[in-house]
Structures are given as C-alpha cells and as structure tokens.
Image 1: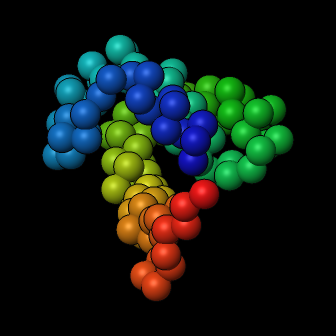
Image 2: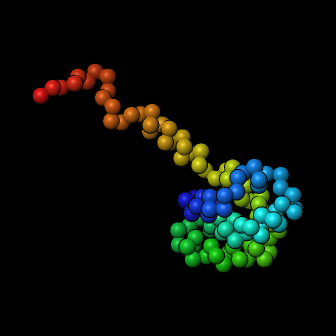
Length: 112
C-alpha cells in the first residue's frame, strides 16, 4: 500500500477527478499521468514486495495496451476508496488515545 500511495500522490490527482469521469477526461488523464497511474494499479494488483519490485513496470505496460482508460481510472478510484487506509488511521487514533507514557491514575509523583 505504501508503494501504491507513493505512485498515486506523485500524480497530484484528487479523488474527485476520478469519480464520474468521462471518456475525454480519462484520455486526458492518461496522457498526463498514465504511466504512474497504471503503475499504482499494477502494484496493488501484484500485492507483494518482490513481485511489486520486479513486475510492476511490465504489468503496467500491459495494462496500458489492453485496458481502456476508464477501466484504469475506475480501479484507481476503488483503490483509493477501499485501500485500507482507514484501518491505519483507526489504529493511530487508538494508540494516541491510550497515552502510553502518561502516568496512570493512582500513581504518585515521586520526588528526589
């Protein structure tokens, strides 16, 4: 997910641009950011460290030749919406609320 997010964020595309995209808009998007966007989709599809390192570029090239731009934009939208970042955010919030380093109730401050 880290590699997919870095590919997506390097394009500068907002999620609203990918929702309800027309054919002309998807063609313009693929001209501007097609390589990086297909790399993000290919990397998410491979879902492995070594396979992501070795096979992302060949799979992205294959997808550019055999998939329509709307299909790639739709898959990229699904990755952004259902990509699993909400789990990371929930864990971060719960750890922050735990305040691991704060003294617990009942503990007394000890002076020297």
